[in-house]
Image (cartoon, rainbow, N blue to C red):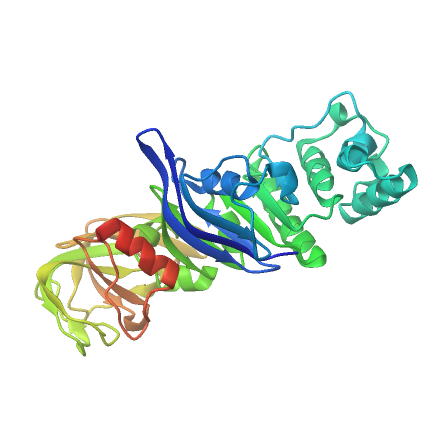
Amino acid sequence: MAEIRIEHVRKEFGSFIAVQDSTLTIGDGTFFVMLGPSGCGKTTTLRMIAGLELPTSGRILLDGEDVTMRRAAARDIAFVFQMYALYPHMNVRRNIGFPLVCQGVGRAEVRRRVEETARLLRIDHLLDRPVSGLSGGDRQRVALGRAIVRRPKAFLMDEPLGALDTEFRHLMCGELRDLHDRLGATTVYVTHDQMEAMSMADRIAVMNHGIVEQVGPPQEIYDRPATMYVADFLGSPPMNFLTFEGAVRRGDRQVRPGGALVAVPELHEDRPPGPLALGVRPEHIRFADDAPLRGRVLGAEYMGTTQIVTVETAHGTVKARIPSGRDVRTGETVGLALRPDGLSLFDAATGRVLRSALHEPDHPDTRRAAEVRHG
């Protein structure tokens, strides 16, 4: 397998900029997920790695070799699309083996590798079946088999589970991750589904309007978002924001949204007076009678062991995830205690996180994104 490097890649379609100066390193054997909404540039980036699109500027390196202008067929990369793109007149065996036949591989070797791949994907009992009669999940396995049988340097997957129903997608997420671990493959996976990304990825790149907002392990991105966009995109419900005017200085351990004094991790930078946003995940809020931050309950959603309670405060509406046994009445006033080590403080004008004890200097990829966005 191989490391993939994207260096200052930009892609323009006429006056539209699809990808803006992206720099990424995808480590050998990593399951790397590109996450973001439709139109954010993730699929365009994947297609440039594959050679299906050429960048307007920048370089793409595969295993240390510059492949920027190389044809897709010469990059030793396998692409799995959202739609299965199987050959309906061929059975499963012939569909999987077709890339090897095109490469001139001998018949005996084709048979051996097809059967080995089918066993790996648990579809060896379907080899002589027509693909037209298969379920969506089995068709996706056949599409994966056609990619795996080539033994490429990297696998690129563009929302391969998008056509499956919710229950089967969850099952296939686990199977894809297990397959990745068994193959030791370098995998680049594109999705708009945060649950897919969080459950499968070693590292995630969150994209927005062609910009890489943040790169890191799932837990780091969830706990320490680099921008308000990342904080809002990840999580269900997403991170809450309490907005207020204020200034902070290096070493501060408290902020004051309105009259409420809230403890935060020690800040590592100064910020002149201006709009600030205090970010807190729903699970980091609890109700406490003596808490200085107050709000009025608007409603509650029962979730089994927990409930999501919506509370209106003077600085914005927040959602708190609390035990379902806590009796909550619409219209009552409650105190909100925020867990200090779960808080993020943002510059609301730029959306950038203010560095604190929990937010070390931005990842180089994220720092570069901030320069593109705000520079």
